[in-house]
Length: 204
Image 1 (spheres, rainbow, N blue to C red):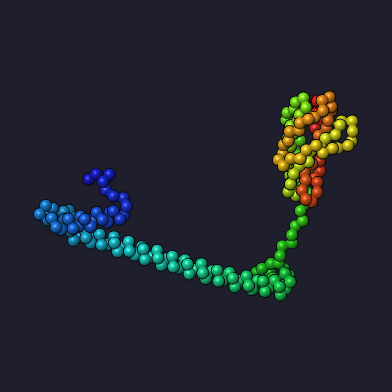
Image 2 (cartoon, rainbow, N blue to C red):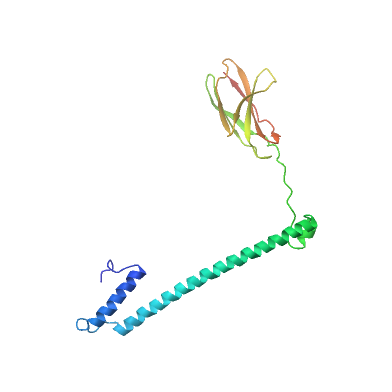
């Protein structure tokens, strides 16, 4: 028997089995003594059909049982939430009283904190009138919304805003030739500004 011809799909296997059963029974003159007698062959086929039908019935029952379980859970959760809202309103979200029923009050909202200090500012490359700055995000403080890049002349204490970045790098062009400038980066969010980074000196 060529294994390439034998079907893999169960439906085709059953169809072949049915054709074999009727063929052996109708042509006993050609196939007088099959190793598995026709009655035994039919019994094996019928056993498979019954087992398959049992699986289908079990699957249908399991689906119905799952749907019933999900429906019951949804109703239970709805009842739980109703009683929890009642309990919260009754004791004004008091944690101690709500703990008596295994619940807790509202978590206090945490206020946004300013970012921490921007870290490890370096100048990765520069040209006659441009400079690329890289840095690392703060390790502490609130979430960073943006970074403010500042510059001052080496001989001055006055910092000027010269760029804004959303990521941890920026390239600034149009830097005046012959100047000696100091750069730093400050992290920002709605709560305020973080501590400035270390400074980097660049000579153009």
